[in-house]
Every structure is written in structure tokens, then in C-alpha cells.
Image (tube, rainbow, N blue to C red; front, side, top):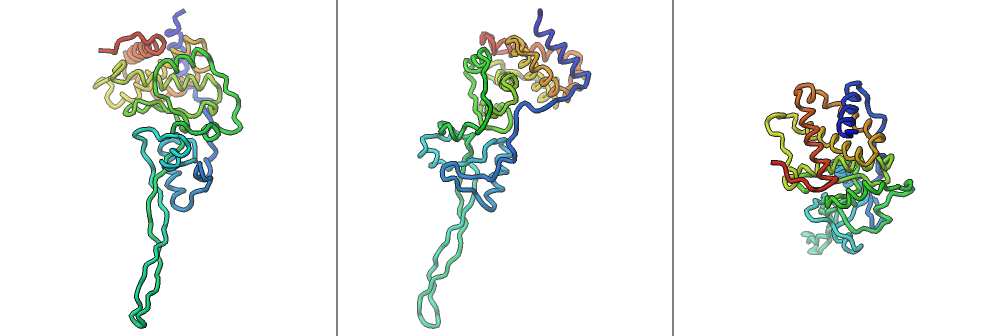
Length: 288
């Protein structure tokens, strides 16, 4: 049985049938709550609430717990190199002595001075206590040994605690929601392997570039490769039936890429196969 052909044929048929997603691969936090300090448990107020909510939304942070750099250090944790903080503000009361021209007496006038301070989200910090990084009241996660082994042995830098799954090429990092937030272990591994397929395209690995052929559709085409690559990999692991439909729902918006270029699906499956082989065996030379 040719797993790659079977998976590809099934995905295309599902796409053309117009099947849509039945639900998300992971659960999202219910509003996240008011941002608070992870060490003092104090809630932030005023404009800082909006600043931190906006940062969490933009960066896809799942947690609304924050720390200063020094607070993280005192907890035995470390903000990862090159992580950027978000600036918040506080008001400091300043006493200013003034002389009264009428009686030559000094008096004090006070005013508030706005000062900055900087915070980092839990997702940017390594080495935090388990009670801060493990979601409360989550179901037990049952790992799939073969898939877990692939992620571990890949050598990819994977970070958790985000509200979305994505690969950051400039940092060469994979960012994922916490494993316990996924609706099933199969969906966790399908998502992680999708991002790991993106990871294989880095210039130091398969150096996947599409150039002028796909133009503005190059991003969409890379997503197609990542979906197919992940489907091939989970297919090899024997868990394809639990994930193919979810993959296909993501591919629905890219049907136009396939229909506009009759060779696109063959290029995509070829690149996806190389990526899957790289993940499973780690023995391919970077593409020329």
C-alpha cells in the first residue's frame, strides 16, 4: 500500500467535496482573565490591562501571567535570549519643595510621574515552576510513543504556552499551545508535525523555496506542503485516520492553487514527501 498516494487522494477528494472543520484542534482559554503578576499574584490595572491583552493577542500567548526579568531570575527561571518585553507603566509620587514668596516658608507640592517597566509572558520564560506552566484541571495527556520520539529526536526547538501553533523562521522555533489543551493527542501530534514540516524548509535543512512560480501564492503553497508532509508522517505512524479530515479542512482555502497549476499537487506532494522523509529518517541532503 502506497500511504502517500492514499493520503493525497483522500485529501483531494475531501477538499473538492467541500468538507469543513468540525472543531478546533485545541481549546482556547476563556478570555484569559485579567493579567496578573505570576509571583505576587497582583492584578494589573488601567492601561496596563489593555497593553498586556493586546500583546497576548498579537503574540498568541495563552497565559495572562507575567513577570519582570528580575522576578523570573529570583524564581530560578530565565527569559529566553532575544525575547522582547512589553512596556507597561506605573505612576510614582514625586515631592517637590517650593518656596512661598509671601512668608519665605518652604512647602511641598506633589505630582505623579509616569514611569515604564517591562514584562515577559510565561511563554517567553524557561525553567518556571510546574504549577505556573501546567494548566489546571486538564485531562491526562496520553503520549503516542513513536510520534513523541520523532519530535524529541528531531532537535527542533519547541516552545509551549501559546494560543496558536506556528513556526517562526527568523528564530527557527516552533511554538505550540500546551499539549493538554489539544482536543486529542492525535490532534496535538498532527499540529506539531505540521509545524515540524515547516521547520524542515529552513535554509540549513531542505532549503525549500518556490520562487516566482507561485508568486503571491508561495505562502499558501508552503502551507499545503506542511499539511501534506504532516499527513504523510502521521500516516506512516498509523494515526492518519484520526487527522486527515482536520488537515483537509485547513487545505480548503488553497484549492485555487491546485486548480491554477496542474503540476502544483505533484510538486507539493514531492516536497512534502522529502520533508516527511527528513523527519522520519533524518538522512536527506538539503534540496539543491
